[in-house]
Image 1 (cartoon, rainbow, N blue to C red):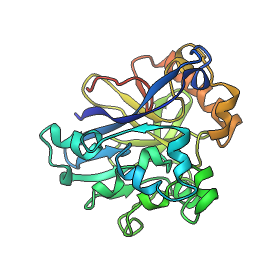
Image 2: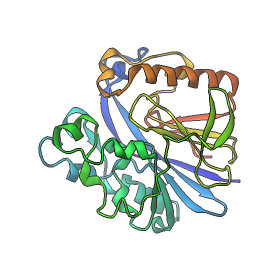
Image 3: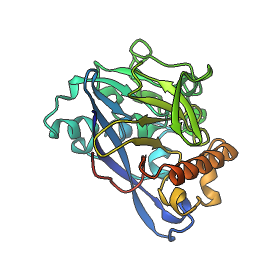
Image 4: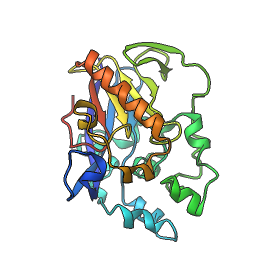
Length: 273
């Protein structure tokens, strides 16, 4: 049985109404959450790395500095995933695997803090950004300097262009990619927000099954109350029809499997299991 620690790595600020239609025209905080998974045989596995002060370093030059202008970020060293893990009495260097849901900067901020980890992600997600620089990279919310020089050498991507290899019991998401080969962590495609975005389904852990759904939605109310993003949010949604399809499938999943805990990356901080 696995355990999950969910924690915030800082936050950005933006208009609430842009993210959900039931919000107000006010500036609110959107945390960037990570999940540390304790696997009984594979050790510590980190889902995304959130913000860290490295984001400010990677965004110092033009045009990348626009990233932190458009969505002002608050994050200190103590907020980073590295320090959050250490505060739990766990050596961050013991993190064996980092699963990256996609390659937006708010999910890559702490990647360089884990120099001994192996990186797992969908091949199409990295292929979509690896050669981008300047304005094209910024358009994809990708800051190239966040990745270490040996990133490719320490990567173990799975080919999401090939058929999924693991059936699931989830309505709307019948198949996924068995990341460890034991059925304990199943990567599931969540298209729309970003090329190759993947969530991570964890069938067995304390307090029931969990589904880490990255940026498929920004607030749970999009799933539970059909509170869709404002039209302005489409600027950072790569494929809006695919986004809508993913939302509708998540709504069906929530209806048929309410015991599955859905964890979006930018919703209010959720308690660990």
